[in-house]
Length: 375
Ligand SMILES: NC(=O)c1ccc[n+]([C@@H]2O[C@H](COP(=O)([O-])OP(=O)(O)OC[C@H]3O[C@@H](n4cnc5c(N)ncnc54)[C@H](O)[C@@H]3O)[C@@H](O)[C@H]2O)c1
Image (cartoon, rainbow, N blue to C red; front, side, top):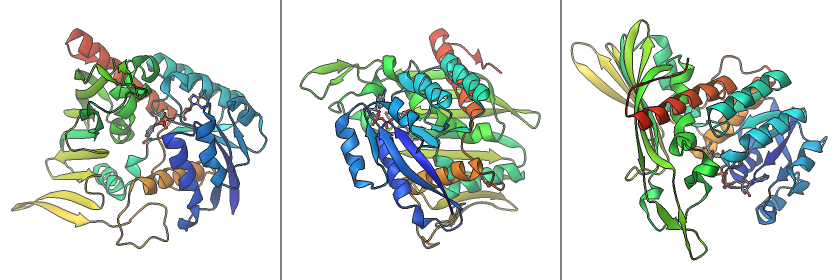
């Protein structure tokens, strides 16, 4: 067994999620590399306290440069507000470490391109976090689309919905401020999740029309006052892509104001011969369309068919924590050259491609017009 030493910069929501995925790595049965969390950096000393319960995490620092200087760190995972992505990602690369970056991979397209340039110059192994395609149902949808079973593809929908912003009493955080989240707002926050599978299939939008909406302009600031919120909260992107010589409608949806949805990622692909639907609202269920003399939507309960095998029984259902772990297994296996044809993490190029879509969507909204996506 090989051990890879990981440092986390940003010990908030995602930093803790990743640390807990490592803590139950023994669940995986067919991977020859194990992550060991050796260091964490967070500006907030209280965020560091949680990491005291992880014995291997000996370095807990408020200065991420100390983490980058540590010889006990091989790979760095960075989960900080978007306005700090570029500076911290490029510092990680300059320190000679490999990187699993969080989405959206920079505040905007220009920033993402500068990060990509730094990635190429550094030669380090870099991927971008996007875990939802690691659900067994999502992987089956991806393989089904690749197989040609859809026939001529008629339309594709891919999206990510939340609903917590419907509550006007929810305090504002940095994700509702353009200065920290980026002008893209929900595009930056949820867009990579919606784009990952279509981009991996080569279904790159060529032009699009976007409809963006804002939610509450004021929210409690969590300290007894109120804060202004200025980000786009819902985005509907009606794009055209070219698949096998045909123009195909591709709709990308990113919503923070989606009644009833908690963390719902979904994909639907319809063709003349077949169709497939998967949503994390039904985490073990796959819907497959078949056209014969009669037409059928067939529902299958997939169970726990993850691409890296685990001790978890095959009939059990997967969840968010499982796909985070599967994504990390893919990252570490690919880093060792052992992905062996399995689905891999989003690449820096795919992250830049998602930013090209977001930039076109912002332009489309501004001009209320169909906009070309930068090739
Ligand atoms: N993949 C996913 O499903 C998913 C889900 C949520 C968030 N995210 C992404 O993860 C990143 C972080 O989001 P979050 O929800 O964990 O945010 P968060 O606010 O919960 O945590 C961010 C942490 O970063 C720390 N921080 C800020 N600046 C820092 C610096 N210079 N040095 C060290 N620490 C610093 C903060 O103190 C905070 O603890 C974002 O890029 C976000 O888009 C991804």
